[in-house]
Length: 443
Image (cartoon, rainbow, N blue to C red; front, side):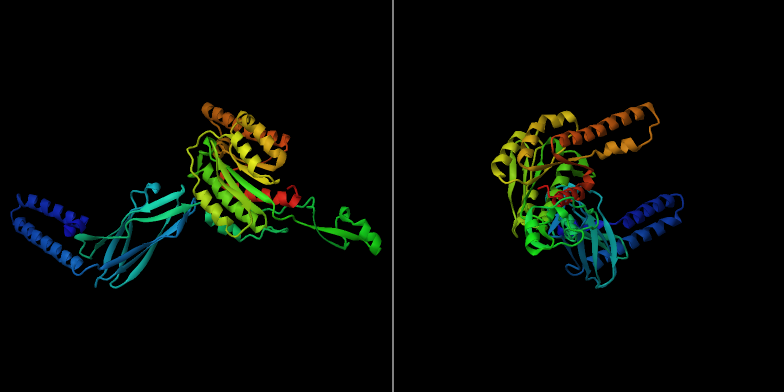
């Protein structure tokens, strides 16, 4: 049975068979062709038997293995490798059909290559997941044929391999290359002009030209009879919480990723940046109730803890309950902290329903509300309207964009900071805001 399960007739065999059928049909009118057609059948059967002999002599003449990364990075290109070794004493032609996880919805995956005798080759192909979770690979199928091309023999390898898809740790590695310090100016992160200083005293030093006159220490100046200034340094070990709304408003997808997954990826990166800047990073997520709570700490195990918590965020996209969020924040976050709230508000009315809770949180903490531009609406606004319907669509799009700007102004009115960003720019804009707040000593 295994013999017949692994045996597949190639198109070349069918083409030859169709040709012989046509030749037999013509031989009805041209009798001399009948003998040639019979000879053709004999040759076809002989080639078929020879091909079987070539491909089925010995055991396991093809070796292959699928090499998966330890984990996939959500929203990024991940590379899968297939190593193949040809143990046949002749050149073989191989078609690779890998059973890719159902989340990718790829039903026509096929790679073709040829291998010389006793040769090896590694084939790589990219996969870009858009959901967190476990991705199950099926069989790695190799269909091998000889130069005769009458049949192919199927080899099966590496069944039931699983890989977990985590929040975008590749972004995390990219941003680790940045040196976030007082004078940092690197790709994607703008330099922030300092307009103040924090109140953590470091030392008294001699005045030099350019020092802030407001920091002159008059008592020390009088004792030394020379201008002396207080030197301050950035306050460290300040708590920074990323709070993710996993309710209905975060279900909207852009470029394959939902707003929730954009927020999860940004939370992972900003937590790493916070820890690199010697602050404390924490997080929580909420919809109908508050879950995935990680207390802000500065320790070596904090990033793995946050990564695992972000991976485990699950939601049914219910309506978010901001009252429970406020109660949890008041009970669990006792020190003044920077709170980055990832949510989305499409209209001013939707903001007003939650504004009392946002104002209550902002009384005791520095609250930054992060919400999203609708890039599809922006595309409509940029298009030239030529018909009445397109003009109508453009007016509606401009109304939605104007509502977003009104939300920013409304939050500003109550002393709540905000970030209005396109989903793909979320991470960089959030880091910029954090660096700006640190530079201005607002926390």
